[in-house]
Length: 293
Image (cartoon, rainbow, N blue to C red):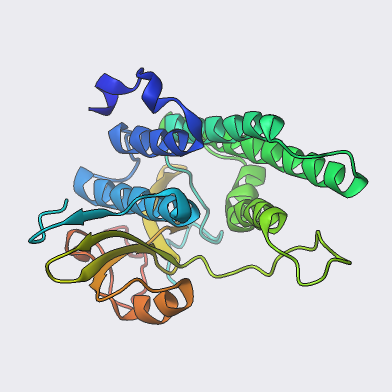
């Protein structure tokens, strides 16, 4: 459906649709994953990533989204001895998704230029220039990951500098988010109107649908950051690569809840059925057998 309708003007207008197009590109991509024999595990991982990103989108646009409703529930530490290095990061070999995300940042730059705000004061100008510069930096960072994704897809090794970028990706992507959030947050004191906000945990929740018969609400949200461990080819051998991934959770509750309540509830929620077979129990450690079996 996405491929058939992606040229429609309705799907190319606004940042919300640009975000959805990034998800659609990720879900429709069939990137070959080095070291992975079966597609089911990777498809489940990508589905979780996209759903968690969608929950983040719903959370960010909560006040401009309508909830759906339904009657009767009809809504819809051991590595191979020859590898002495610590686990290296890798990048999903899916450059198209990274480029779609970079396009989202470019669109955001265009929106910034059209915002009806009085930029004449020096603090306002500094804020605008700061947000503009952060958008450009974020776009360039994602494009850099697209380049790394092509290298992984083509079987080319990543450099040590690129490995460092991967290890720092959490902070590299969290900082711009904190800047953007601070730009729109209210200040406790007018004497310091442009101070940075305190960072919040990644876990967040949005309510998306009500059932008028049962009086229940469907909640979707982002859970704690998950860990991904995968054996990857490395100089003719194999090495365990590690990374962080989104986690997605959903639940039905009597009423909507806020993010603080969600962070108490989310650790108690079960892993979605379609992810259970690929999720290691808490406390499990992964290793590559010494003999390579």
